[in-house]
Length: 125
Ligand code: FES
Image (cartoon, rainbow, N blue to C red; front, side, top):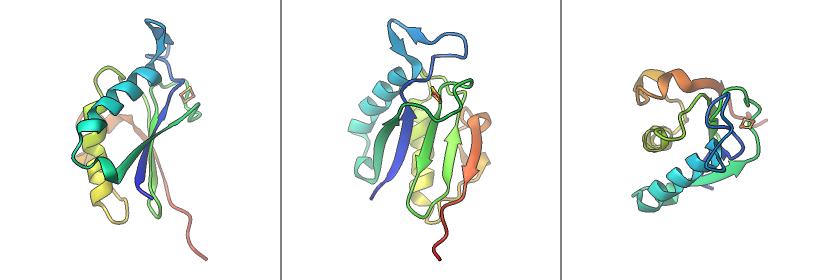
């Protein structure tokens, strides 16, 4: 199964502005990502998934990187109008890391303050 970038479709554009032109920030970000993903050379290695909430609603937009045997990274406070390309750049780092560990300083500068959690993968018994 490919690694996934999960987008919360319900997130607002900002903490105080839920929708713009009838569209949530999360829906806007999803569209931007899908457009870039269609042309992305590594498209087959990363699936774009969606969810209704990542439980960090007060800090929109939120996304997560998820991979089998890899830590899950949660990002929030993303600007849905500008972050899509940066998210795919960060996805390349995640794909290229066998154990999924990605140092914050290697992330695009715009994303560095947005990384809010790294959750370890389940350990096999
Ligand atoms: S609405 Fe996006 S995290 Fe809850």
